Amino acid sequence: AIAGVPPSVAVGTAVLPAVVYAVLGSLPLLALQSGSTVALCLGELTAQADALGMTPMEVASLTSLFVGLFHLVLGALDLAFVAELFSQPLLRGRTVIAAVMVLSGSFRTLFGIKLDG
Picture 1 (spheres, rainbow, N blue to C red):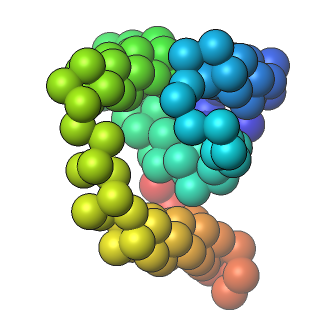
Picture 2: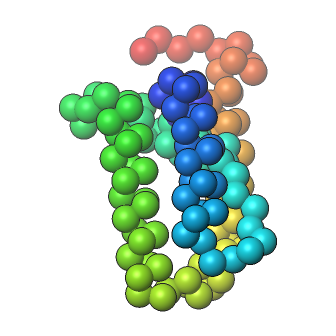
C-alpha cells in the first residue's frame, strides 16, 4: 500500500472520481486517473498519522475531503482558469518531487546501507 492505506481503498479512489465527473463534469473530453505521485505524497502524509493522533485511513480520508471541498469552492467561484495558470510548472515540479521521494526512499536499499533507528 503505497499511500499507507489498504489496496481496497485504491479501487474507490480510482472509480468514484470518474463517476462523479461523468455526472457533474463540464468537459466532454478529459482523462481522469489516480496519479502515483499523488499516492506518494499521500503516503508521506499518512506516515505522520501517529504524530497527528490519527490512523493512516483517517488522514487519507480527511485529506481527500479537504481536496474535494477545495475543488467545490473553486468550481462555485468559477475559478477553473487558475488551473491553467499553474498546470505546467506544477506538473513538472510534482514529477521531480516524486522522483526525489522514490530515490530517497530507496537509497538505503540501493546501496545496502544499514542505519539504526
